Length: 136
Image (cartoon, rainbow, N blue to C red; front, side, top):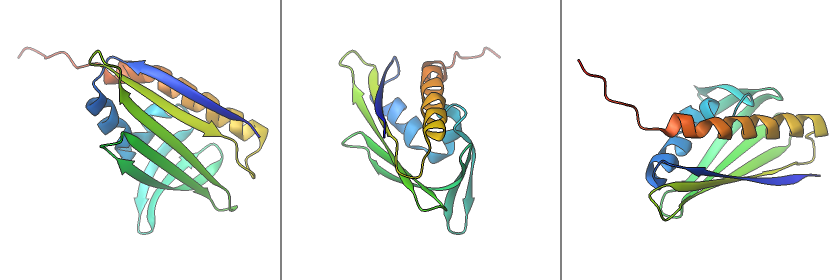
């Protein structure tokens, strides 16, 4: 079983980074190719991924800067991705996520998940840049 931690520095404030990552509807925007889209059903949120449909729950603590994403597969395995968002002391933020391979997730599926997260997080600084005002 493998485990890796990704850490990223963003020019965005801690609150902007946290709010973006804590919004479950933004999940497809920062998980690379891992989460293709997300839908709200009667029984909760579902993510459509390369490893199948996964039920998704979040546990969010703004004060502590913690976002725990819990993915449950119908085969019975559960993957928890703990994200931590901290201030970098210069007006920016540090984002870290732990990615641990769980029983039931093949090496190939784990690599796909990890690569998707890494690619998505690499693109996060572009998404977190303030939008320039457009003159009318």
